[in-house]
Length: 366
Ligand SMILES: *Cc1c(COP(=O)(O)O)cnc(C)c1O
Image (cartoon, rainbow, N blue to C red; front, side, top):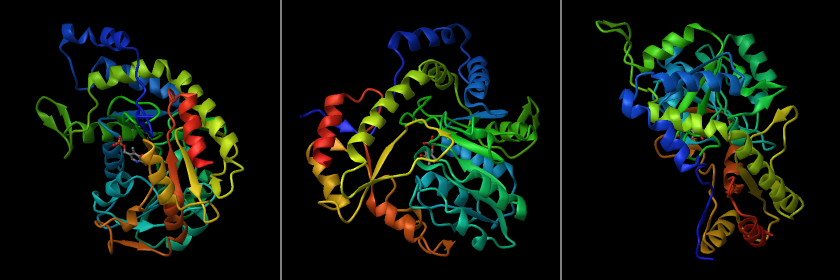
């Protein structure tokens, strides 16, 4: 009863496995700057994620900032995105000095409401930046149709969608680019880390310059770059974790199905719909606490907390309502996003979550 159950727990390789894998670094003393392990992880992830091109980054947020910057949109251009996400998505657009245009989401799965995108397009619109929130896949076909019609770029925040496939293809192969996060709390991690996937080969060099100060030679700097390189210790953690990823996702899937079986018919608890054609990664288990439930979302959150179960209100508040964004964006109604954020509660799910712990959680919820 005293043990605390958090919403997630980092997946760890065996201690000896990681220690053995990092040993060669004490010989080479080559710890970063696109070394051998960085290259190897890029090679393996390209295959695993089933994507044409990939560039590793120090974290998912910088991956987002770098790919937005790589497209070179004029300052003040408008980007259509959703506020029902982790704040990083919104920050990455704002920090590139672009105008935030928030589109509402669908109550069925929390992704951008594609039927409301066109109404937000102006002559200043340059891109759509949707989020595969909780690994729920956006309406890719309709978003692409709109982007093609208006000549817009599509950049997916796929931070929650590692390993997800849509219609048999890697989720990162859709749109102009997708961004993954390999943060310690994500399904696959490199401690901190991230990547951009894309199909236009020219982007590889642009991203390389952006993540490495624009340095192309000892005496040659070609662009105003930042520093967003993944180091070798991160890359090796990724190589170790990638060996166990199928097992990790399978363990999540078993637990995810167990939750679903017990919660899908519970009065007042609603679950997101599962999209067709998707092979999932079972990253999160968000529940929606409706009015007909025996208590409010916040009371359920408190009840779980009192029992040392730390569910999280992912995502509340919506980013549009955070103090740094009030009055800073364009929108035409965010009713569903706000409503979902007031109903949602993400309950613990990770590969080592014990069945008795799940039963304790389910007893409190049911
Ligand atoms: C985790 C996350 C990010 C940021 O990734 P970091 O690796 O933590 O920098 C961006 N967007 C979403 C939706 C995320 O969940």
